Image (tube, one colour):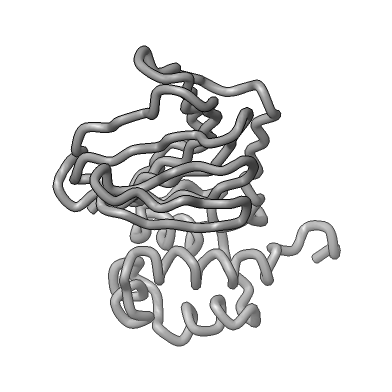
Length: 186
């Protein structure tokens, strides 16, 4: 067999391990579901087997993944949002803008925002769903942040986590205050 026509064994080995663990299956259980020998699966995950297309298809069916998930190298998903881009929503009661940087993907429970705020009226938030935690890292400026009846003054680089299911506040103390906020859902 020509070198270029060989199966990408290292990619298949890593993909099988990743997908089997994601599915929460043991070697024996995945082999049983795919109708192949456990030793064959073990060799494939070690990168020493020589899989046929039929074996790979059987594994894809057992793992409920597309064929390409096993044979193509994983590509990192890189997302860039340049300053001034992204969906932004302004407060109607304060000089405060929340720009969504990353929404909660499936099986994760968080959203990431870039906050920009000016001194003046604070952004007072009503309680969110029970169990929500907000995390804030101040990037520039100064701000009072946290539970409404006891906010903490933050400086650049400071971090705070507080219960988002209680009334909370973000009050800029300097012009062009900016922060990254992560809303974590239970």
